[in-house]
Length: 540
Image (cartoon, rainbow, N blue to C red; front, side, top):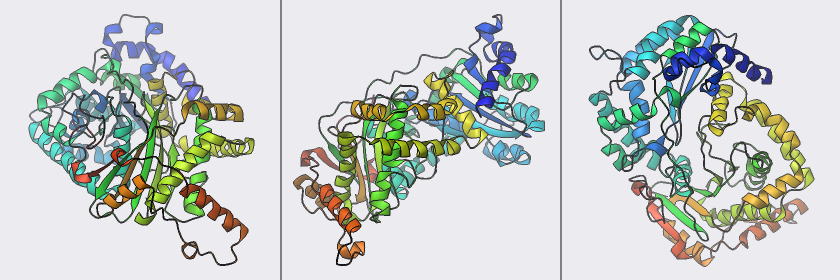
């Protein structure tokens, strides 16, 4: 794959002048060498299908205050809100009809995150001219933002927030609440899909204003397998013109003292999900990124059985379906096995996700996850643990890079992080090989902490009050019994070791006074950018 990625620059040199003329018209007279090469990335492929990904450097962080959801509505309206000839607009059904002969993937998809919006599509080579003329060109250059379509999409968005996210996806709910709350005090502090009041407040004029400001040629980055000059030139010609706007400052999340717990209640939750998180100043491209990556693989790689927490909580004790930790935001949980690209962010955070456990074990597992974090910080990793985690981390490369679509997406991420010359996938194996135990433990000491944490628990409303009181008073810490563990007397040595670990977990001091514990109903969430009952996180 490295050879393929290096090839893009030789191809790109040949199309730089085309990019200058078509993607950046204001630089049409400039020499090819002065054109910012990172506006277009090509990975030519012998496939009969062309893959195209277009990243707009704007997302929900750029939503106007009080109108959270603007970025998402703009992106959806470009696809479904009508484009082209106002007398015969292409709306959702018409777009499906046009793209159907070219395959399902030819219908453009869009992923809106907090700082980027990425459109993706796969088109047969022979159909590209027709696709550009009928779909891509008018979609980006002639959006109509039809009011009836806005009303429909707005209604669908509100249903998603008020029904699906609040009540139908317990695990996703906890992940999203933590994502907003950890980033409180920044423009990243609300759902990428928006808030209830924000979505209701957005007007057609707001959409047009956002589109004109952020959907400009210089603010869009293209990664594609289209390699020939004529086709690439036609593709770039269909993108809007204009300079890039000033980026929205992200700033730093609110500082908190001590530990705080938000208990989110659902009326029908049959188990309890647990989360914790805190901001970190490390992101891709930083020297400590790969040492911390190795440490995180050891603690709990996403959807993988290798991690220590997975082994201890799921495999050995059978409390739930999985236990994971994260060095950066991962989109698509709990649905995707491997992190999807194209959700880069300037501000990241470390987090732990404990998949739902029985209500009676919540306090115990809350202590267990805290002990695991504290233990990693206190003791670090042995050389043997680092070596094993590096081997596992190398195998993840095969999944991260297993398709052209993922490779294109990671190259777009590289542009965001300023890693054009040392790409994430390009350098992953080399960077992992270079990590030493000393670097891992030094990075852990520098960046991980357990003193100032935000916890999110999603549980049934019938148990929330007692749970809050138990945690505050350090009582009713319930682990599994010998019978539940299926352990018979005399206790085998390996099982005794597990029971001794249970005692260590149960002895953890959470230091969560009652005034730091807040209970909120799921029905109250996502009304505004504020997280109800918590400090910070209010409207910008």
